[in-house]
Image 1 (tube, one colour):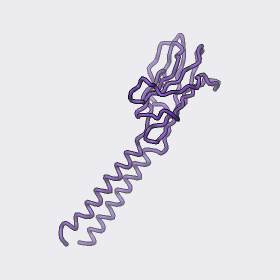
Image 2 (cartoon, helix red, strand yellow):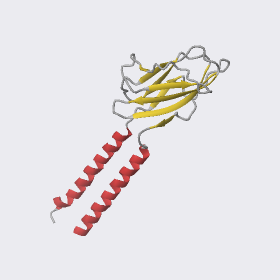
Image 3 (cartoon, rainbow, N blue to C red):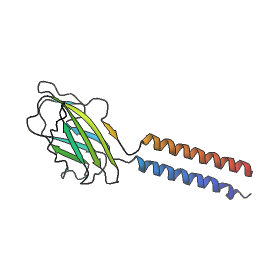
Image 4 (tube, rainbow, N blue to C red):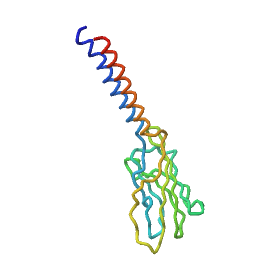
Length: 176
């Protein structure tokens, strides 16, 4: 058998491998939570006027929500979630808060709509304590949930590549 024919299976396998990882990286692309004011799991000493959340990718102008509730579940935001017009990268959402928030724990639930067609949801808490020293954000990241689990996509891609490699190797060994 000419040597160039033996290369065909290897070229096919490398092409499939490249396509698999390109597909997996696209599936992992989401507008993830990056930071917020007030900080996730942090403490503020004065009532904030708004909640600002920055994401990792550009967002659509519509389909985004931030809902802030107090410890009793009462909504304390004004329902005016908007994309920050001052952010040229279109990665920042803002919602106004009602005036006169009292000390306590507040939960921020958010949903974004990125320009790549995916949406993410998540939540975090912050504490308002007028007598406290501001604390930095805690180590755990805020809870998020995407349309698919990224590790599952990578696991399936890796298993697919291994299966293709095994089949091609077996075919080449039998042809020799």
